[in-house]
Image (tube, rainbow, N blue to C red):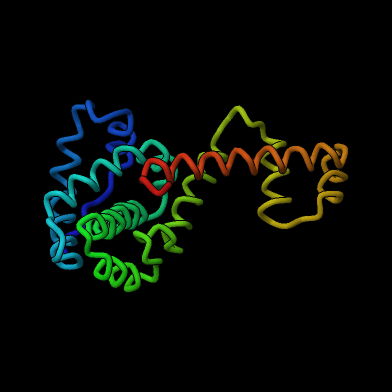
Length: 196
């Protein structure tokens, strides 16, 4: 596969505002060779130019949420190649090559329905959504702490309520609202990738 470019968080944040940003061509020039090499190596039965265009459109839609989670080396590369893989499976399905689409999806441990149920992809979408939720300054530190302790760490709601000096109902309502917000964020990210 082609050389993996070093990801610039600054570049990603700048281009996340929209396709009209003057640095988009720089992003495309930086990542296109890697995408082309990956497409040729992994998806030779799919037209590379169309695949890369679809991938860049998918990335453009999902990038605003992704930039908040670009905090691990290689993470953006995994995100980018994940979008490429999903678009390759979709392209095969649209071309009536369902058997090839299912074989490609199976190779990556995903379902044959366009790779939309892949465990890695679900984890990535969930991680991005969770990052957006926890980074939202309007949700308040106490709400985030309740959600983190009860929903993510599995602490008993009554114990959390007592330790924070709030009523048990506050903990239950906070968990419910934060879970709903997380679900909405996940749905938005899936929509951006055409998963729905």
